[in-house]
Image (cartoon, rainbow, N blue to C red; front, side, top):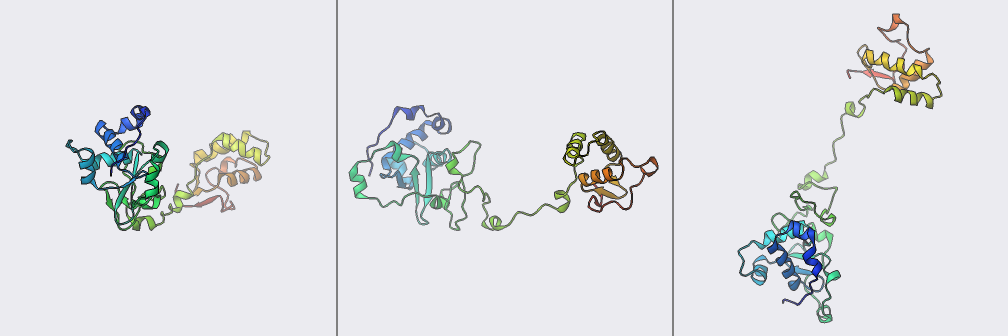
Length: 255
């Protein structure tokens, strides 16, 4: 049964509503208020609603409704048997007659878990309860539409899979330090000879941060070794590195 509802002038000035919904869609939105119960909920029956609200217009009310949902003004949900829609902030803007509340309603109230049963693209019930979320079409939907940020997959099997860990090579990928980073670390270890930072970086940059067939793993450990072994190796040793070097600094393989 249709009911009388209030409409405020601010409705016509709502730029979010106007930007994402055509004039007929906005008129359809007002019409939904008259069909909703005192909570702002109603059963979704497209053909019946079309006949009640837009009987003289050649339009697809399902598309109008989906667009209103995506732009955050209504929310579809289901009890697993029927599809319903909820008008967002209905009780904030409407003051239903007390007889409506006393008479009750057969429409179950909206909640987030019931929303996740709906496939918004087709307005059908998702029987496997996989939690489909509205497809974003380039607009910025309201935050309330993002039902489950941690599960964006439409395949329930995929959502159960744990993300694959990155290969160890990527996790431990070595990044050569800058002179400033070396100087900063020197200050941490109380080594007051900043000029050695340039020597250290230049030496290892020339070598490609590689000694023989091994790559550097920890430049800070290498710097401590550099400090403890009298800084720059003699020219005669620059083609090789002492065999006693700490294994924590270098590891086998290419860069």
